[in-house]
Length: 73
Image (tube, rainbow, N blue to C red):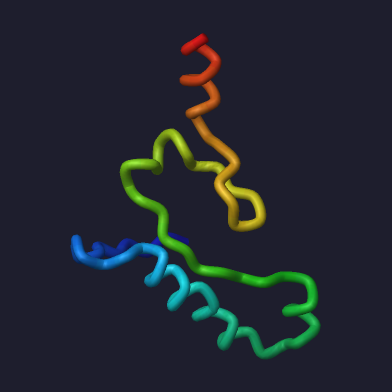
């Protein structure tokens, strides 16, 4: 699922991420489910969607940037 947001130029992305990170946890009422998963919401700049599109455990692990690096050498 993807939602799109546009931040004001003066808005710090880190501050927004900190505020929205746990917003979906309140929708999980089964504590057993929360023992196994921890859903988090984050924002990712559109400029990085193509080259940095792979994530594991909420961290960017690459994407097509690996081909840019491979052919850049």
